[in-house]
Length: 350
Image 1 (tube, rainbow, N blue to C red):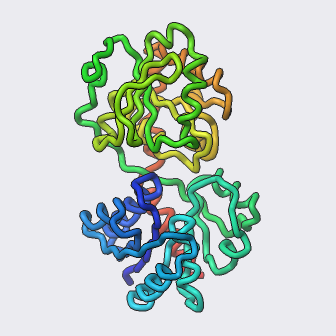
Image 2: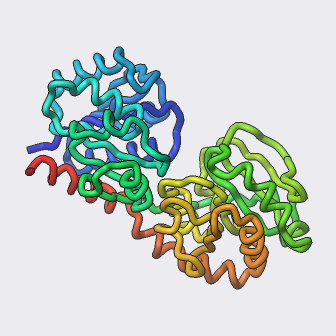
Image 3: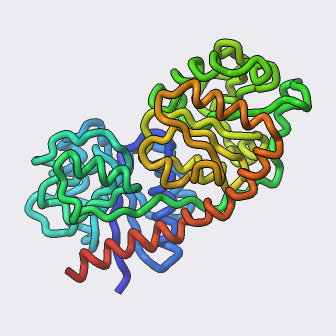
C-alpha cells in the first residue's frame, strides 16, 4: 500500500526547516510514497516543491490558532484521507490540532528548536501521536518542559552532499590579498544566529588576526562593505549558489546562541570548510571538537577569538578540513528519511 502523508509547514521564508520538508517530501516521492505538502501561499517552499513535481496546497496560516486555515486543512484531510498528518513547525502544529478535532488520523509533530515549550498541556497532549526531535538537545529541552521522553523519537536532519563545481574566488572579487584568511557566517542574519556576537569576537582577535582576516556574511538582505569593530567584512545578501560561495571560504564562524542542530555545519564539513562554533543545542552532535572543527563554550568570546587565531595556521585548517566529509556523510537525506519512515511505521502498526 502506498503511504499517503500530509505535511504542513507555515514558514514564509526559506530556512533550514523548509529545506528539511522539501528534502523529505522529494525523498518520499522517490521511494514511491505519496506526499502532499500544505504551506503558506506563495512561500519559497511551495514554489520549489511545485517545481519538483510534488503535490501542494496552500493556506493562510497567519497565526497559531488560525481557524480559517484549520477549516481549509480539515477539508483537505477529509477529501484526501492521508495515513499520516505531519506538522513541521509550531504554527502548523496548532492548526493541525484544530483541523483534526474528532479525527483519528495519526499526528506527527517535528520540533526543531530548543526553546522552552508553550501551552504544553494544550499542544503537547495525547492528540499528538509521536514527536520527532531533530537532535538529542531538542529532545532534552522538550523533556524539561514536561513531555514524556518515551513519546519522542530523535531523527537528525539530513542534507544532500553539497556540490561546488565553481568555488567563489572572493579575494579576486573583492580585491583582497591572496594571503587573506576568509571566515564566513552563513544563514539568517538574526541575533540568535550570532550577529550580535560577531563584534564581541572581533574585538578580541589578535592584531595579526585582525590584519589577515576578512569576514563574509552570506545571507540576509544587506549588501556591501561593513566593519565589525576592527574586522573588515562584506555583506553578500542572499546567495543563490550557496555551496560555491561556502567552498570559497577558509573557515566557518557559527556564533549562534541557539541551535536545534545546524545543517549549515554539515554543509561546511562536507565542503572541507572547518567550523568554529559555540557549543549550543545540537551543534556538538555534528561537530567533533578538535577532530573536524572547534567548539567553544557559549558566551566565551575570548575563547572563540583564540580558536580563530589558531586557525590562521594553514596546516591546522587542513587537518580539520580533511576530517569533515566523513563526518558530514553521517547526516544524509537517506538516513533522515529512513528515520522518519520508521516513526511512521511504528505509529501505523501500533
